[in-house]
Image (tube, rainbow, N blue to C red; front, side):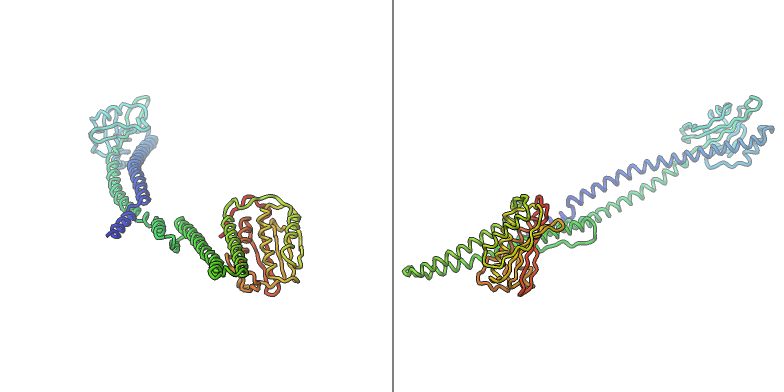
Length: 481
């Protein structure tokens, strides 16, 4: 029952989750504002276009009458009006009214609205105008609405003999536009509803990777880091999925490394503990020789445990930013000092291959520790007649330290894994077994300096370990993956 309720809550959350609702709300608000503003703006612009066209028609009628009058200036005004109105077919809702001596004469079309009929106040007033009326002249009538008009008087010998009145009532065209806009409103409303439904669905699809991310994160536990998000496409959501998957890969590697470290450390510590426990249980306290031998063995095993714990602590500290204390050193002098220290590790054919020249930045103690670890390994796997050589150089902004020996070499299959914790070479002919952390410490010290360690080895011919560091190291960016 609880699982059923939980699933219902999750399904409801998937349907009405916050990001999707916010996107939908913003889309709804913006769409409503845009549609709400666009309709009145479109209506007003359409009416303005109608008025401009009407005024252009009126202007064309006046210009045509002017040309006609110029051709027949000496004819009687009545004949001029008759011929012009007979040959002129005005546009829809455009009316041509001719007046002679201040009185209505004729019109085209014959039927006129009451507002501009022969007895209307407007026609009587315009029949007396001696100057042409241009511009955007408009009067409002309660019955027909707005009336746009222009006039062209005919003056002869300083006397007004006639007036042509050109008028238009655009209310009909405006109503047609409004009716068309009402239809557009209905279409836009239906389109808006469809768009909102589509926006709700598409927002869910766009945000699906985030829901997948949430669900995947919920399924991740401290013992299962294998869940990943499927990557589709190349957009931001795909990049989010890749970033999450890369993060999980790093966490899984770190988790497995931690588990492996705990398993290996417990295994390595269990061996000396078992040895110590077994010998103490079988110890004959009355036999002084056996007691002395047991004490020596126990102390040796305890020393090995101490070295193991110290090495593990060193590896743990290597991941901290305060692990290094950097200072500038002279590479040549530093190389000679290390060479002198190495010679005390055993009787070998010690050589100094090369000393680099220049100033470098590093942690002297850590690098000495790494070089001495490599030299100690070289002593373990060589004989007194073998050569162990140290060298240093600066090449293209990188500092190289190398330890070269002519010992037994390392098998190819072991050359990568020997830098792992508690790893041992399968070609181990030395009876002294180490902790298996020496090369891991060397690698950690190199990486803490933003550097690396390289290995070149052949069985029966020896090995060369090279620590490569940046010459101008400032603040280290530690990455021990």
